[in-house]
Image 1 (cartoon, rainbow, N blue to C red):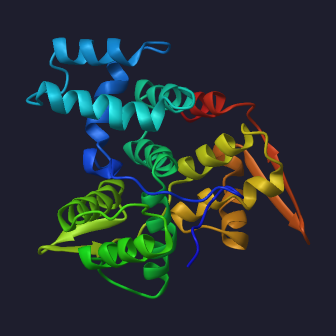
Image 2: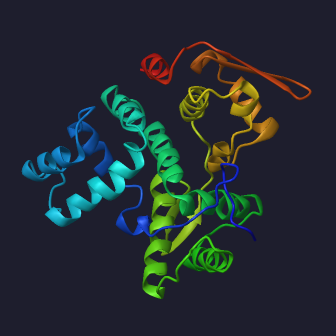
Image 3: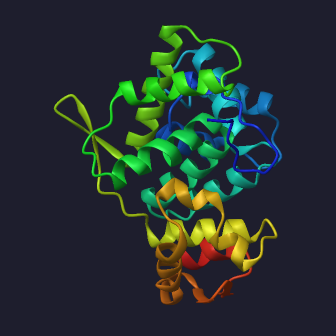
Length: 267
């Protein structure tokens, strides 16, 4: 298999970033409460450490979480993800919406997580698999090492740590559940709010209605084609979306002008 990409012309290169943290839902919520838009990362690290915001976490670990997880996922190349997630937290919207939005940003920041979710996890669901194990992640890493997505060989210890990070992230978001020492594939149904959030977020990238409906990010939730359009169309009353398709033409009617306006409406 050749290196794959969600952006044409850009090859995928995997990193060991997941060794630094999985979804970290609770830690991220806490950091968002301490983070101020425009704040420098150094200032956030200093405040979080000074006020022991991440209780019982060492200074070294706090520094890793803020710099190598939080900043990498939500502050680069802009702080828009952090601002929107903070608004979701401040407005006390559902934890499921928060987890889904966080997962999108985490996957975008980590090609390995993105590709495993879209190339392995969801196809396993469609084949009727009931469990997912470390072995599937290790097989995926072996394939990635062979086709150049992992430019330098990782030790077996690093590979196992990354495998645990991938599976833990999927579990934290709700795709997997721990049962008797196994990771069972959950019957996951993306929330209406999460689908609307991603649709408006993609629209703000300047995409056409057709490009929004065909964007690969939907595959993170196992959605595409007519199934996705049906879900979008069902959100007209709740989330201000109306999707219609005629042949190759897709038209979406948008009630709100921005992601922030959507979040306010959901609140």
